[in-house]
Amino acid sequence: MKVLSTLITKEPQRKRGAGSKLVEWGVQQAKNQNVPAYLEATPSGAPVYEKVGFRKVGERQIDLEEFGFPQPVVLALMAANQE
Image (cartoon, rainbow, N blue to C red; front, top):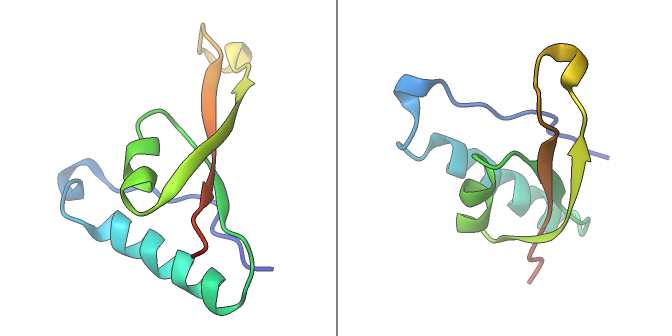
């Protein structure tokens, strides 16, 4: 099993395509190995994944109040198109 646990682009480097290229590479690796590609995306990350072919298949909430977040964080559960 291959896992990319976290992908973050620093603010000055955003909107330049590096994150999308890394995700596209990972999806291609999954296709080559005939394994599904899926992820959990933050609200700000979900549009990046949709651009490279992921689709939302559900969501989950995480309560992070003890860490200073007053509202639950909602993550999009997303799967890559494997065509």
